[in-house]
View 1 (cartoon, rainbow, N blue to C red):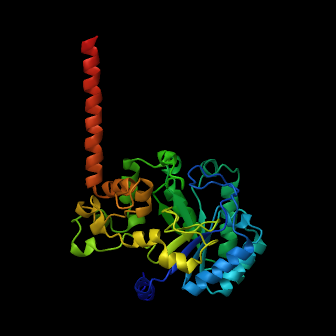
View 2 (view 1 turned 180 degrees about the vertical axis):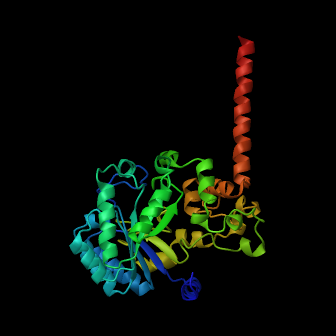
Length: 370
């Protein structure tokens, strides 16, 4: 983080300013990715007028960074009208798209509007693997062509690669593809539960061995020895640190106007169709509760050896049932990184052992009874 951005974040925290907003324009999509956490039906998206008014409200509230995403953003016919209005309000804009609908004209317009970056997900450099994940034949070729068009215009492109069982051995190939295309590469080792709480898609997460391989890859994490060093446990200053930016300097707005602390933290906190954005940001009881949480308030994490170094996501913890509790997925990442189990993992293993032992005893008792 640059000194200037760090100063902006510090001031935003002090003044309670929503520095960054993630806005989904639609959940509709031309792909059906197997790991997607969204419902792709339209349940009454905000209109063009409503979104423009929301953009005005966000600008007036102090929002600077704006991520426009979906679904597939270009499924909305008013996408460029919305983008043009956002640029008039001088947001620094990042787009997330699969790129399939980006042709020469669209690339020209994105360039002309001065978008900061465009993120496109590439799940594998192998067409059969990528297309099986998106469930859209030819999608890899179309996305790569969009990246070439954007890069030809000098637009910063980020290739995002979500690590799953289906593509666990392909991230090096995607990284090489990104280098060939002149794009930034970003690997995400976490599959997110559905926004309605359904955790079935977590079966797509890679196992501990695959995670460990990623965290021992110097090309991905830099200094492996330092990155994977045994944790020293949280100190006094760690106990007062904030979990992340969600609800503090950032939030998420759905296509229906619902406000949440983050797209991975679906705690309903208000709706911009009935309440002004700035009033939700300042007065929402849910957002204020999120802001009240520090590591010190987390019974398990505050005494865990990983407390000061864990990537714990409060949204993932919320989806497990307690925003003040541990995120098991992050516990598993900490273990894969260091080889040292968290307090949460120890308890889960002990519970699993007890349950297994009880089943064995019951089985023996049944045999004796027979």
